Image (cartoon, rainbow, N blue to C red):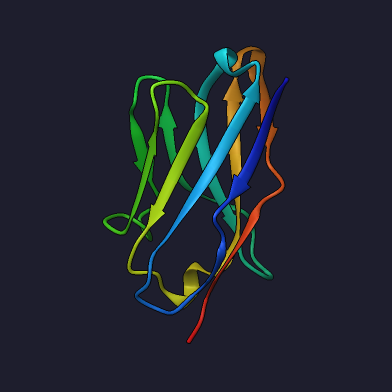
Length: 116
């Protein structure tokens, strides 16, 4: 089992920055990749960024050049640095872990609101 807890959400003006954190605990040695998803009101959940155990990262086109995903040496914490935020980035952001044996874990989410 893997537990994920997100933090760092809040309200920020357009053009501002936030850093989200995803704290992982439990069987973190089984994690293959950690991803950030988001879900805006009335929209489907979408992949924002991901990072593999080998450090390979990927991003949605809508956030490339603005968001950066990173982690420490272990899977204890994964970060999502979000810069140049736009109102359309407003959403609940979820941390997701892909683990061995096709196991999939989710956190409860953290709300990001971009508004003037």
